[in-house]
Length: 237
Image 1 (tube, rainbow, N blue to C red):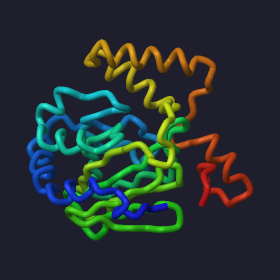
Image 2 (tube, rainbow, N blue to C red):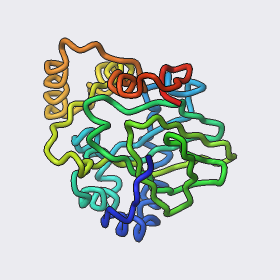
Image 3 (cartoon, rainbow, N blue to C red):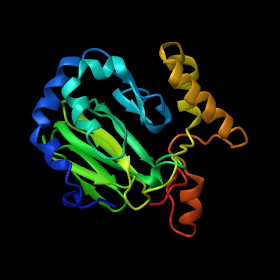
Image 4 (cartoon, rainbow, N blue to C red):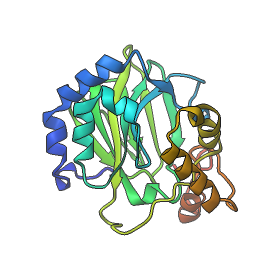
């Protein structure tokens, strides 16, 4: 479920520089943050915003220029594929879900607390943990998880994905959700670089015959856990 962070030496630099990262986040938190497109994962339609630095290996150059020290820190992490800031407003609850097939199994996800309170938490499988400012947790995105902020202040973290060392030579092919694909086509497309557009077109070609799933749903995960109790979303309890 949760990983032993001492197995990943790079966390030392992130912990040492967490205030540097927080200060750059604070400088941009009133600009550039966007609503996470998978609204069906939320109890209400709003409350979860992100500021991307890397998306599936694609550098978000304008955002990276605004956060140069954070960018340098995440780029130094072996196998980093995704990085950015994630904010949950007070009262926001991200429903139980799992990561994308073709991707989540082969990465590990890291959260670094930047603005936290004791009423924020993350449940992964049967274990729930809280983050404090400057602390780090790492977990497996294939395991059902949910997050919430029941406090009165926003909760903000640095989140990043890096290749799971247990799968060293696997090409990542995330099976994105219907909502995320629609977001790329209608919102992100005008501002995407030529490289990003080509990468997305290639992804569409590779996944031409696949049925695009709803957000937070994994056919592979459901098949793997067949026979266990499931919640109302069809995911394991």
